[in-house]
Amino acid sequence: MTGGFDAYGHAILSLALWSVVCLVLGMVATRGKNAENTCTCGHPKRDYSNVVYRRGRAFANAMEISGPFIGATVAAILAGADPFWVNLLASVFLVSRIAVAVVHIGTEIQALRSAVWMIGFTCVLGLVGMAAWTAI
Image (tube, rainbow, N blue to C red; front, side):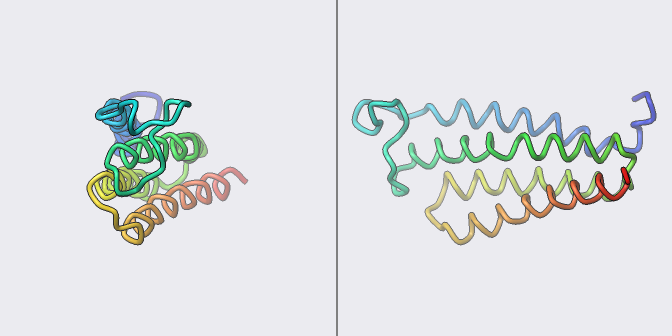
């Protein structure tokens, strides 16, 4: 790696792997869709007991957090925030978001899904805070 980003290897890898996770979720989200379980708009009918709906929501949820995660991580790296914490938070975010997808698709335990989601959300807030603190 060049350009002074060597210390942020885990964070950069987390960004790359997050792209793969999103691509996989996009493919998984279309499995099982048919005329019976989708609305006229093409989205699955709201029904958490239906795995097709949960797959679609897992993908949509991943898309919703992608911008904040990418922006916060890149900002923290460019601001020169402490590499240990940037790497740690980006890596924990990635693991937590994989867990969110597994829980979202595989279960109907909304409390567990929310708890795991909050871990990733907190990581993003931490990255934002570090970027802001370092930049000023």
